[in-house]
Image 1 (cartoon, one colour):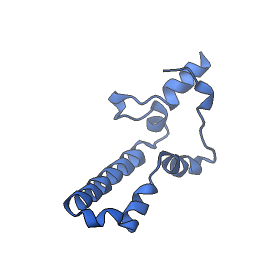
Image 2: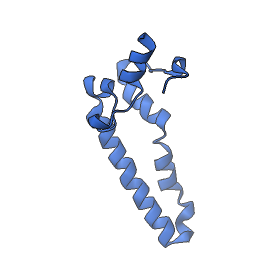
Image 3: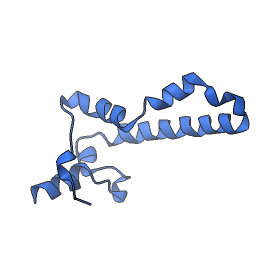
Image 4: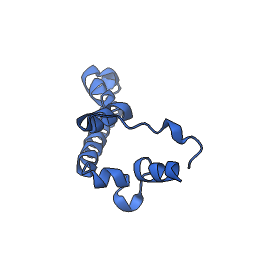
Amino acid sequence: MHRFVEHYNHARYHESLGNLTPADVYFGRGRKILTMREKIKRETIQHRRLTTSNPQLKSQPNLTRSLQSFTPQAVSKQLFAPMGRMVSFSNLDGLP
């Protein structure tokens, strides 16, 4: 039961909470996560527009490097580092 509650509160995104986890909302990380998602979305759209309208810009290193900094691991590290720990859900194999 404990594994299910951990998964439900910390790993499972809830549509009714803006695709955040209950823990994100409870610990006040929700606004920061949504802001980061919006920034990633804007930069991705900008990058796609640049590369599809001008194929010569596909190898634009600065923007590509900027987008690569928003990997799930990097975002998790930024969000959980202030708490002094990184949350791991690797022990929840088999849960939906």
